[in-house]
Amino acid sequence: MNSTEAAAPPWVTTDTAWTLAGVCAWSSISITCWQIYQHLKTYTRPAHQRWIVRILFMVPIYAFCSWLSLRYYDNTKIILYFDTARGMYEAFVIYVFVSLCFEYLGGEAAMLAALNGRMNVPMWLTCTCCVRPFPYGLQFLRFIKQGCLQFCVVKPMMAVVTVAAVATDNYVDGSFAPDGVYFWVALVYNTSIGVALSALLLFYTATRDLLAPYQPVLKFFIVKAVIFFAFWQGFGLMIAQDIGMIQDRGEVEAGQIAMAYQNFIICLEMVLASIGLLYGFPHTDYKIGGPQAGSPDALQGVGANLKNTLNPKDVIDDTIRNFSSTYKKYARANADNEGVVEVAESETDTDEDIDPSSQGYSNSTKKRGRKKRYSRMALPEMENEDPPDSLA
Image 1 (cartoon, rainbow, N blue to C red):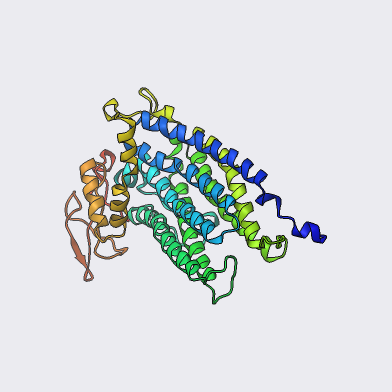
Image 2: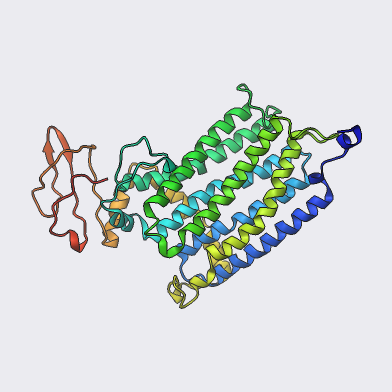
């Protein structure tokens, strides 16, 4: 490479690249905003569409933040702020997708009834190859929610640490020095997202047949593809920078070039994502007479429906509930209200066989100084069966 080529700025930082990225970004934003409007217009099933619209907002946020980041490629602080906003919504989308699947299946109580008697089959794909088989019970469902929610908590915390480090000039992007902030932020972040994605995959393997009417493969692929591609692209570009494939070009540093490529590629990918979301979450399913349509009485104005979607109260309540010691009581109360399944609650985990003294299996029985309570499954085929050996 001669001195002229070395001094020339890389193509990805030129106005041509930014214009092309803008065309793709605004095309994807237009497509998705139209889809959001259609869902808000046919808002017959708020329990489903609230989560769907929240997923759809991923495309405008990703596209807009990436496009502006590409424009300010030479300002590390501005890029970091946009990347932080994009990353925080990424964490939220994982939780939103799992919550949507819970709603598809009728909530925890209905899922407990549907998953009753099923066991996890250890396999490397779900990172359970070294774990003993376990039942798909209440603790399993709670782990899935907690696995996704913890990422929603960890990501903002790491964002605050990163912003503070940048503001004090203690942050070097791409530096894996153990005494640097980037190394520890990346370690915590990657561990957290790994747990969240593993929980998402484990949940899918447990419920894929139950979710079959809702085309889970396409939905699952689109959501994970957007998150995974962004993550692995950034990781690959970071490696390319470390091994010298991406080098400084004139006044543009290698790290800035790598980040510019990342944002440019995301702008292109959002076009594909917006088209995929059209087919993955079609609003026509919720029109009156559609396969997933709810009651026409639920229809309100677009503004009121948007307000319902943006209201974070349900997310806050769910977060507190899933990390609270009263989770079992909530699940049992929810089951009683639905009339589907009554959740068993035990003082201590044990494999002891206890012969209940009544058909309802609700009397506590002591054995070897430990207590365990069984609850009757309120399903017709379970009325005259013996109590299960263990309940989650």
